[in-house]
Length: 209
Image 1 (spheres, rainbow, N blue to C red):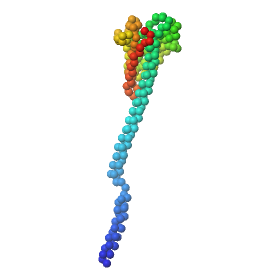
Image 2 (image 1 turned 90 degrees about the vertical axis):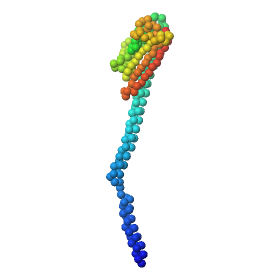
Image 3 (image 1 turned 180 degrees about the vertical axis):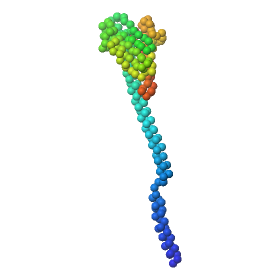
Image 4 (image 1 turned 60 degrees about the vertical axis):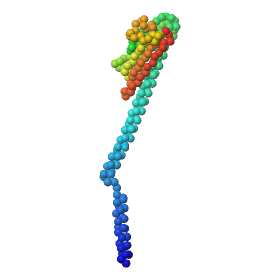
């Protein structure tokens, strides 16, 4: 009989303890646990946000660099085409191919329509390129209109070579040296609005010399 009473009493205690354990298991986060969780979440979000910002900036830098490179290539292509045609003289008039030849300025002349002069436009027959070191701009002057064709340049240098590839270094070149120019090297050093450097160098051979 006493064994039965003891068993009933133990069963009753177990029933009484069960709700306490269930209430203990159902309890929420403590303040310390919540603060730790928020801190961990904040660190993770900070890392993710920093990565996204870095990726966006990298994309913007790359896009600006590509755009500036394309602009520089387009300008270089224009200059290359016109320098190659310098001295074109189908009527054998005998004009100066280069009216100006300095490290920052160059005047190219060509008789593209064969009328015996180099004063026409459309196509332009007398073009002057000038680099403004103060503004960082490259200006093209066709005899009537001066147009800025490239900005953001840190430097631009024209270098002149004779038929043997020897540098004609006594710039500005005199008339005698200008007549011996057979190659022109154009070196551009620019940067994007975000300060990304962009460099381009090419050497152009004259077709008429």
